[in-house]
Length: 221
Ligand code: FES
Image (cartoon, rainbow, N blue to C red):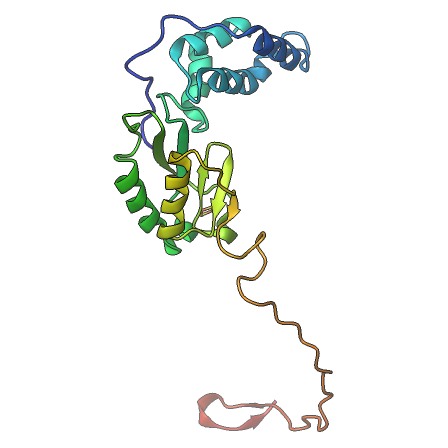
């Protein structure tokens, strides 16, 4: 895992909207007294959603204060879990799986598309529309190669179908998540084959005595 640091430019402050504050209180109420720190993942996630896909340092402090935790402990959580982005991401944030099954099925070609259409990894396009990052297995290996864009998976990709998705998003068109070939889920990629022939019963039993051929000699066991 690469080193995860806070972004060099940070907003001066953060506070939950009234709606998110209500959500946070609801989450905290799920835990026994003095165990409110258990709500940290939910609260950091909500803060990230509110900010637009990344977690600024004032938001981490804000959540730590709300949960009566030392700032350092909240920072440890935010920097440990890669689901928390410590730098701004594009409106369309592409997480490209580069782990072995996806790699074997063409993730490198998808990476080239990212470089061509978006630019360097972890950099936003000038218009703020896109950014991308390589991640580890996203759990959709049977539909490799795949990417996650915001909250949706796009699977069974080729360089061409992936590029078409990015272009469609750029043009504000709707894109269908899921497998991008003819599959609906993870069923066989080709026509399913069902065996309908009646199994035949062997007519002659093998009655010969097994032999051990060690040392070149045939010996009856
Ligand atoms: S290896 Fe890519 S989803 Fe698992």
